[in-house]
Image (cartoon, rainbow, N blue to C red; front, side, top):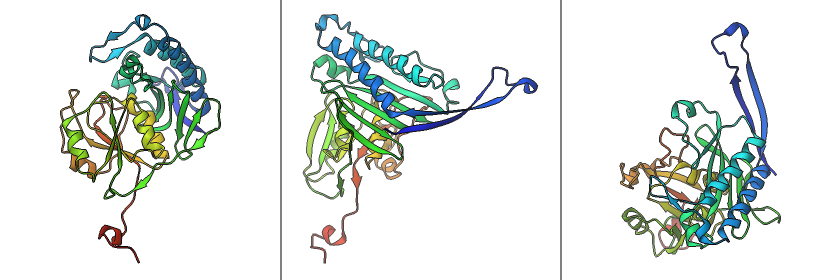
Length: 316
């Protein structure tokens, strides 16, 4: 299985004492398989809680009104322990950890970006549409990502320059690819959130010719794009970095893109012109001062329509 080779300078504790200090270069290969197994271990703990009496889930409401359960906390503990074991020098940014000041984070060459359970609302609904997400960031971009669906034991993973893959249980890894399409095609498949919608989403969808629409929870929407089962996933409602980082590298390695569609407020108010920002084709970036993502759109493999097709005639 593929991995990422890390090289990052680390200074000794007395950086100003030049006479007795040294700069060491740390080299390590982070293997995707190690991260997959950490996610699967967390998933087993999550499923034990999921299949128990809901009264034992210890559901709480966080300051941003999002839910938190015992499963989120247990999964986080498993993932943090596992990542520290395989890469003790790489800092961990997790939705369920104490926030790390940007004054510290901005100096990270690499860091983990973790969502122990993406789709806690779906967990509570008991519809199985939740995932365990772990990404490795290099600077502002993900270079390794694992998205694991506990219900069904399905894993999706991708590594920069090495492709994207899907695995069920202990089965083999199968390469996945986004569907190729033209934006002018009729009947494209669009996927949206099962728990979040917005007027901007309806406006965006109206631009397509007779699209089919599917609702799905968590990062599974991205996975529909990555596996070619959907052409486009517009997310014109608030998300945070840990919600998307792992999925983004998987979509990108499958041949798609995840591009910005304009900054937004935490309440979902659009702060930039969506069409103007979309035209820049700027990927979503990470380890920002504010972990709030902009609106974004995940596309499969967009291709230009042949001139004859665009004019409604057969190509010669």
